[in-house]
Figure 1 (cartoon, rainbow, N blue to C red):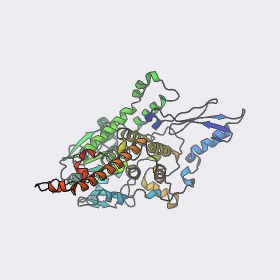
Figure 2: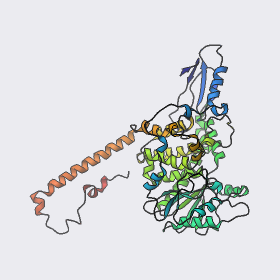
Figure 3: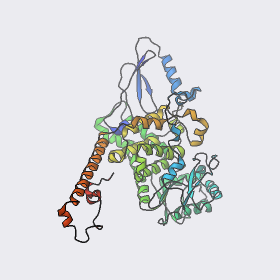
Figure 4: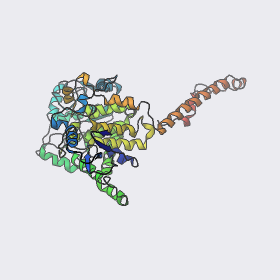
Length: 494
């Protein structure tokens, strides 16, 4: 682009999709005026004319790069783009619960948090065990970090096993107990007849969970009689932040190809990806076998969101559609209070903020890994994931600007509908990868062959020869079936 007397060049690496998902590097020349962007792009500006002052350009870029530090609004507030659909209503909690078959005789919907009094980082609509009372929920909230009580995220339609999410119990060094919390977890277990023991997946390493006792936190001990505790050894936000920094260092400004694999291994990024995916697989496997699970980390808004959303992506094909994936992000990440503003640091020049961490980027990388292994199981591909990451940092839309739903409700009015999800639907509605296109062509061809087969069978059944040889017994109802049933080899796993 050419603006303000300067030229800016940048390009994107495409050889390695994993690195391309995280880092976009620079191709440029001359002056060493660099801009290191939040999404790890690195831009270099070169002046057209000798003697042109760089100071004014630098100050202007600095001012608008960190608007909150200069008392300016984020770009989404001044963006004038209009769309036909209000993006804030892509996800509706009640519609999603009804899609899952809720409420039922084991689970009910509660509006106890309608004013965010119970938990200011939870949504207003929650699904809880049918037998628990509102006062029980308040007592449980007092024993869970930041009031984030165990609530239902997803229920298996066939076996009724559930994924429940929450934060750590406030056990502390003295080993405090809470009978209401213990009883509440037992109600979750009893809501599914096939669950003999409720499996609690603690995303943290065991040593970290023990260390959290010193700050008043902790984990579920032996006093939870009908539960089993499993630690998943996923490290905290600070470890992930340093890992991504190391990953950037090995690809920018130069890549040492002779030591590429050892350098990549030293970042531990892929090791962390493996642990997150492995944890999600354990959750999904347990639920698919008919056992309910509870997932938490420390506060229940980082690693917990990764595990629940990835497990639900594996278990529920709806979330692998374009619309369903948008609902998944809105539900498990935005409404349940992943701290996007703190983790990304929109508009804030304090790069040393210890709250920053690429937790959502890591989730997107995990999804990318899944799309590479099962490309035909998803209605989208890496182009959608890259676009989401672009706008995670762009501040063009309001989707990722806030720490929780309660803050977003305070900041956003109806006419300020910053519509990333609508934008994505519009952008990718007609875009398909060659694999997806070919798969749809094969499905259409299959349907065509089945119709022709059915026509041939109908015509053959009316011939005199077949009528004469159709008097033998046990050739009617016991063998009657549709062409697709007779030719089972035509079925596909999609």
